[in-house]
Figure (cartoon, rainbow, N blue to C red):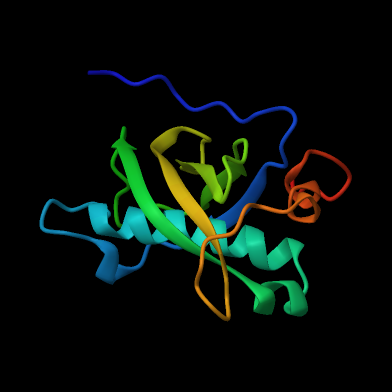
Length: 147
């Protein structure tokens, strides 16, 4: 079943993370292993969070991944260069955010795409917490966008 390509929301920051295809990423089929993509989804979300929030905020709050869904559209071979993840968030639902990620090759073709559901927790207690308004602003489109 063909899935539509995820399109970034115009009201959200589109954050870009460069990715490196390493020899240990390549599986027996000669392309990046599926498990690597899961790591890349997490890496993209973490990089976005770390880039937009200071150390005190990151010490107070943490994110727990609840679910990852990935569509594999085009294999990335061992020689792939200039691979990048582009990520943005959806609307908060209490303590949860959906995070969207597109993995693109050097030509901008979508090789994989994913949706991860993340839950905000207080770092000290690990209890879920409704996403406060002050954590929403940096994820909106505006002058802090990476692209």
